[in-house]
Image 1 (cartoon, rainbow, N blue to C red):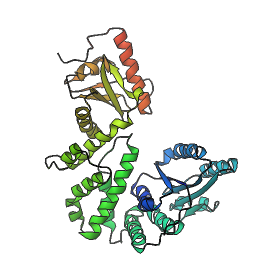
Image 2 (tube, one colour):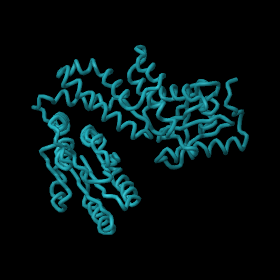
Image 3 (spheres, rainbow, N blue to C red):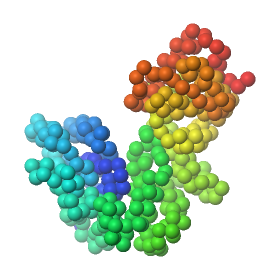
Length: 385
């Protein structure tokens, strides 16, 4: 019998194997927590303050709930600790509990200042989270306990670099394989779910079939496909794609992302070009953009083109219909020298200040299009001649 102590759990974790591994521990018991909502967040160290602020916003919207703010595999500064304590003091009417599970030696002294800050340098974040989950929620099932502890030990071999561990090579391969498939920035929740499912099926393959890295490597495509299948009911087209042996497995993940991405598009993100509808991806993986745009535009023909805007102003454009993106590339290029092929082109946008987000990049592109079309510069109709 599991013990439910909170209405909502907010978990902020790192973006490496150990960070997602920590969230995996919580996700394992999630089906058992029938009354508790769990909301996951991830952050690199330069994003920690931003994500904490976001969680505080969520907390303030649920003042009548009993909540746990759990930070895993992230060490925080004294400044952030002060910020968190001030939030508690300023909101004494809110039933909010902190727990921070850290294992970085650099934060050992800082952790001693607060009873909610646990720092154990002998374990990784995943192991600490496994211990915490078992204790905090009274996980009594021996099978669940064993699984959590085993996965924690496995990830620990990589994360704290235990070169003498029997799992060292296999754990390193898990990390490499996990992050070998890039994801669209906006699909953070989809990516997180994929990673947690990937860990599950990797460990299943490891425990049931083979301890050998080369054998795991041979079966990595099956692991990836199982991770996708486990995430949502399969549409017929996705099932067909997953069974297509003539398509690389990474491309199957790109196609899966293309299906997911439609619901994340906001109206203000759509770029209009003489009646043609376009979308922009900001600073993502170039290979991902090429194939993701192909699959997305073919699947959702109401959109005509996509732009990949890099932070340095370089852009790649793709279309899947009769929209001539070489025309759009020439319009966007600051020297009007951009172009290429009707369905695959590139250009360089000169920006006064480097954009820091997709929204900023979209505004830059929209402003250029509106200004040049207004001035009727060139034959920019966006149609193949």
